Image 1 (tube, helix red, strand yellow):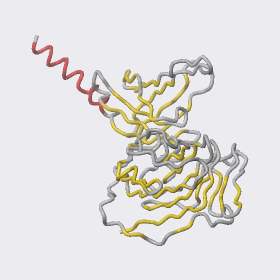
Image 2: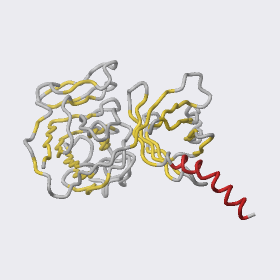
Image 3: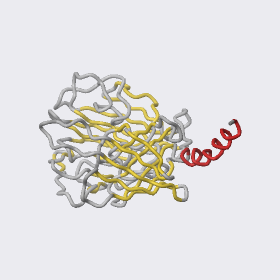
Image 4: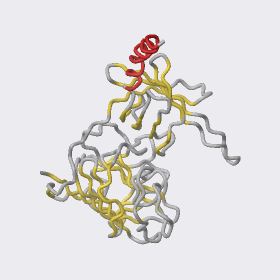
Length: 314
């Protein structure tokens, strides 16, 4: 009996080892190339695997509901939220992938959809060695907004009407419109932004084109991971430092590697927190590379009167 048990365990070991290869953090590109996704899997080889997923389809950092490996193929599902009588029923999100040459090659589809599946490729998220350890020095500040026009910026989605304008030294949008993307790319930096919003505004600043700091009209509300000053859907600010709608506000953001600090209206709300991975604003998944800034303008109104970047160098 003992011999049979040992032989059974040995036979199962290759499968367990292969299943474990799915564990870890993955940066994902889709065949459409419009947005980047992020996946984290833990304990795939166990009876109780867990996972997290970020995509433009669901926006949030979603907990994966079911994970399994069937004949070497990874399957995971994000169940649709409970139906809201006032809204159309949403479908479950179905993902399938295989490991090929160290990459995940997969498909995504909505359950019951007649549309062809979306193809995607995942690579392991890089380990970034840079730390905000006091050794970084400030370079020459760069004003990305010149107070006159949109020089240095372009539409994130050229197919959407571009309704950003500059009046009296203030950059403002008129939604619906495209988000805008800086033509310059940056790695480690400090950023100062002066912005203003109206009631019910929802915007954000994308760092390296991957990580969103939320802008939201939420004066007086409890802090949360979707509120002003948050690393969107990932880390809530320690306090809500928002001012009332219509007042000028500021962000001072420092990013070194994955270490993020955010000062909102003079109050430090995130203090060297670790960015584990992409947020839904991400336009590319190359986390080890410099990236542009994004100003989100497709949701609602936002105004910018300064946008100054100071690169950090050794």
